[in-house]
Image (cartoon, rainbow over all chains, first blue to last red):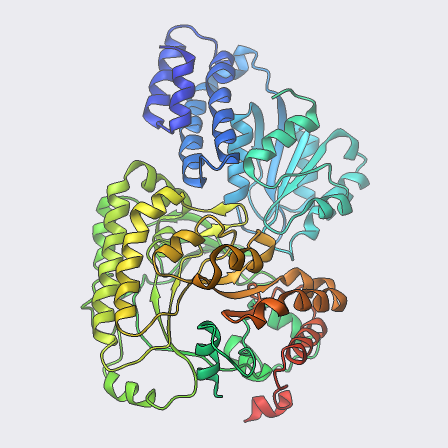
Length: 212
Length: 373
């Protein structure tokens, strides 16, 4: 058994095999960060690439992400004591007035699969809640989602609130969702726009200066 | 030329005096917002708005291809902003109690349809023989359609979109990948339901069109892989569209949404030639579809709603861009989804006037007369 096999289980979305191989790797004494960085992350990298190339579609990504999440559940309790270093910390949420979360959840899973420690604030998240999470969780990245043209302005409010609180410089802001464009991101002063879950991971790593 | 003749001719690429005067509709919150901007408060919903704005009428036969009965809707819990409900699909979800997003897609929490065991329960609600799938005075109703001047359609439901509603996107996705036999069984059951009911309601009626609802694509592409679509859905669509064609219905379109570039060729292969509403912001472009598929595709929508938000110059630019395509036939331009509330009432009225003038559509009687008549 190798961590390449775990990567392969993630790529094909075999949840049970991902669980079995993760348990086996841990039983063999493989450090949890190594399971993540040599097993899960390369697997999700391939999933992201296949999605970008239209070899994979939403169902494939969801199945792979589910396999990855099952493996992560086994690893999470061991990460603190293992000295795990994530590639970055991110807060994610759907902005106030908007209950949509399919795209947001995909981005969350892809970020986790990319080695990020992600705090998911859920849906209908107020600017205050985003700002509070920056103060408490201290992420390097905020990722915001909106599906509706009417809730897009909520993204600007979050950025304004970060400015008002004097913490805008501590965190990069990435936005996405059906009506969002690069032009809108530029208008509201976001640092990046991502058109889909896969490119969100690439943008996030670029923003944080992390090599893919 | 009456509206029926105009609509049918237009979508058959035949000569028309002008394009049909149709629009998709509005979010409920748009109508609420427009009440403060001049829309009479007597206009409370989409059907009333259609009359008020003077659009040409289409009608659908009252046939139910869906859950019968649906699940009992009930509120499970609530706070000051939200309610958690069980909806008519058996889905536990969170909705806003009030405010600007009343008709938005809810936040889904749990689904009743999860696996083969729960599907067996579901099937009881999808029995083609359940009384009430069409009214008991059916013959009497069909007589009213004999000399109609409006297009009459039949909404034949869905082969995948409703399964996605009942299972959730993640549930349907996982089922497609891990239990393809179950997914195929469910689609087959829906296909059989549609066929069995159709067999009864095509007798003695000449429909002008049929439509599916799938909402199967998002702005990044399809929600199901083209390979799964081709294997599971194409043969079932084809059974239905072949049957419809045998009964004189060759205009069949799908409410698809989103980026349909990868699915459009498969739908056309399956006999579903109409794409509605062509969503510009989702990279679906009516010119590109026409270039690729010629007269094999018929198009509805394609007016970028963002232009209506942007203002009058953008509205003029957008409609002028689409006019040459509409002049070729096989295309009814209208806003590419429901009009969102950030379109002002003033911009919408300007859009309607400009569109009607540009396309030679007579402006309807004054709005106040329309609503009172």
